[in-house]
Length: 500
Image (cartoon, rainbow, N blue to C red; front, side, top):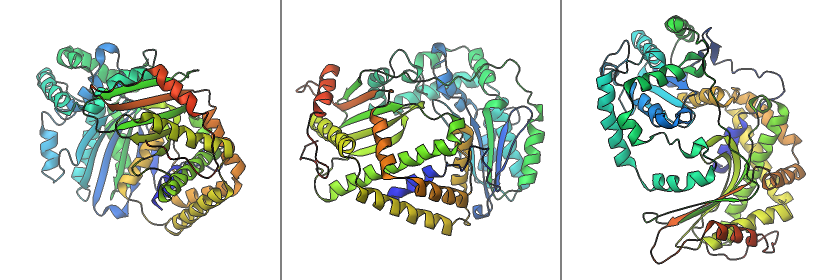
């Protein structure tokens, strides 16, 4: 059943028509005149607790070369003084109510978003609810950015970089420029930034970055829990009334990822890697938000989910029958291409020991070619559809149950950041049942072939342990192995023994 949990969550983004989707009536949604978006959802299951979030469509991808690290630095500064909570008083105040820094008070910076949260707040205290909203208000536009605090925080971030820098970071430095060629920003905008920037940027540079990008048209406030929605909505309107509509605000650009006609290869090695990984990705463009909110667009989402479920079930069958070597860890996925939200990819990956990457390549390509040449069987298709139908019945049976607050928060974040609709569980189940009835095996097989023939291109990632007694292949050798693997004859119901 766990296999289908992800598919049911994915299908929760579907919509029944090309018209504007209905909003889950339990969520109070709106926008202020200055562009601030808000979501408020009372939740009886929260039992006296509430969650407060402010989400920014702003991340490290927006940094210029001389600003690398400012988005993450700014996140740190939000806890070092604001208009209404000077110094560290924000943390001291919340911790006096049992809301712990690090566990309940937190934030993160990614390439395309920055999120601040205050969780497990005792919501029965109206004054505390007001204070949490005031904190979100201050984060949105009134972080102090005191010069002494900035200089003190440089050392903190430098130490964070030193202590958390690991093998993953070193592999990223080797592989991202290859996965994102032509100086694409996704190759050079890891949120931690460059220490030469962190150590030396002028104070005003951080203030300018803050006021350029932290603005209401790029922000959403989310409040979920045991709260009075009408009261919270009124307070949000009053608190943010002093934030003016930005004039001549710069465009928030979403940086795209170029297609490639020939396979691109990224090879990363490190002596600390205990095992290797090979990943083959077939890139394609995501649906535009407006298409994503139509029945036609969601048929494709549903069909892709079926493809992934059948592939996952096939892997499970091969493992149970011993056709896959023990610990091969073959996996198929469909989602963001590497770190980019502006390009999608079907990816096939396998783990391997030592330097046996060629066996892993043959295994992955064989399984891809097998599905492409022979298609999925009627038995595989019907089994997956039956399991999805069972999951939908369970969704319908529990559609009146209140969801956990963190799940509701995530749905609101997805609506704001990615344009995913907010439907009730019952609406989701009913729509998925309709799409399931419309689907056919031929459509699923055709959709799989579209992945492999996508004009987005193929990207191969190979990473393994650096060893003085082994010379890893060149990019050209990896491409040659990939091409040759497609020449191995396939059988519809089995795979040959290949050691990964």
